[in-house]
Length: 83
Length: 83
Length: 83
Length: 83
Image (cartoon, rainbow over all chains, first blue to last red; front, side, top):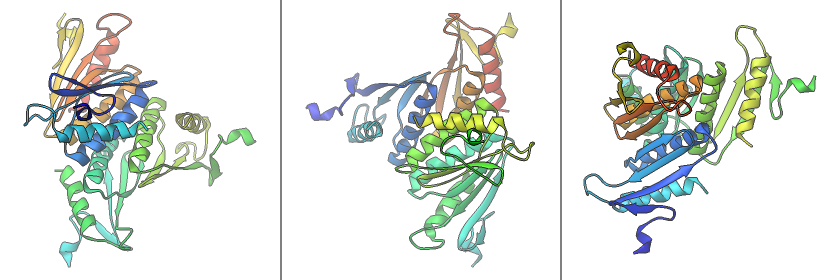
């Protein structure tokens, strides 16, 4: 169902993926700092990478071997940072 | 009772206070970054200040007007970072 | 001279002071994370405090005992984060 | 020459690579926060990824298409964080 994939995310290989691009490293790092707070609050952590102004986030539930409600909730909370 | 004040903290003016000193700003900032994660996880946030290698933390519950169990729990979690 | 004090800052007791207010702790922390990067880049660090959504920054040069060009430069760089 | 590769790093596909493992996300994030400060100080940024307690860092100079002195210097500074 389309509601299974939060806005802006792609479902690929049983993971939710989204790429975020910023003006520079400082902006990208500020975003990552907020995602880190969300991850601790949700007790659910991304697989993610950063290169200068770019942040790639993959969300999946290791124990479930795929995307669960926890991933969709974290993806939604990350989206809310951009509003 | 002595168990009301976590090890290393002082009770002053109805707040739990502790000063942490590090080798440099980078170490102090790493500590602060971990405390920020704890604060979000506990949904309870410190009043704190930093000057170079020094971090001063005050914990109290604004709504209760003093120290509550939430402050003692967060103080204990901050202490655990130093182990 | 008025150009001695960057926009939005106050000169008080030989320090540049400014208070920043955000929507919540996460936004305040993202801002602090960017200021930390600036501080390392400028090799000049603020005296600052945070309480939930509020960040108070004081800039002065310890060795000079007052405000110098280094403080004005860092204040300007912090201001630029808000644009 | 062997001195071209800082201790603990591997040279692979013209990049310096090193994996760091910590006790949990909080420790990994504290380390990343310090590396972010170093990156701004060196004006040279890693390609890096994180998964829970693991941080993978790749250093190379995009403009030079390979490893330069800037990468070795940043690798050395990152190593110094672990001492």
